[in-house]
Length: 182
Image 1 (spheres, rainbow, N blue to C red):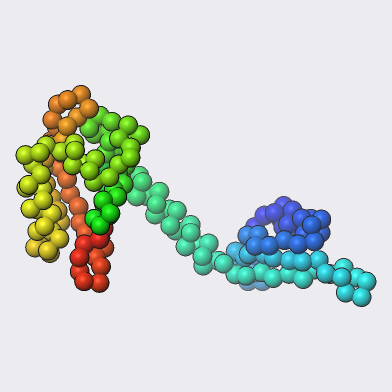
Image 2 (image 1 turned 180 degrees about the vertical axis):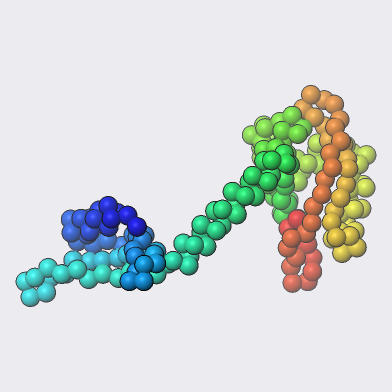
């Protein structure tokens, strides 16, 4: 609990006559903390100034945000620690999101490859490998295989071909079972 934050909020309310949705932490009678969205107005009633305030309990949302932040950091650490190149592909639109490590593996920065899409991957892949990749994708899309797994060649920025192990899984399907995201 930060008393300075409460004092600042009170002063801001008095000075401006109104404050809305300021997140504050306060201690309840039992000693536990509550996160709240504080809103208030200065009102005049019969010549006297009064505070009209509301505090909406957002403790659960605040705790969920903290958990998500922790989980996001943990996942970032896993990706960084394993030095994995990652991608997410919208199968319908071709939109693809690669991480910086993915580009680095083939000698580029993401900025050098921008704008990126599934065509970026296709153009950098060895043309002799694409038919097998397509076959394995179709197997995965149909549910025959749990994962798409493929080892193929990609053109490095310096002109040489490097072998890359590619693995993915459909993470979203439409109502008819067709793959949407991988």
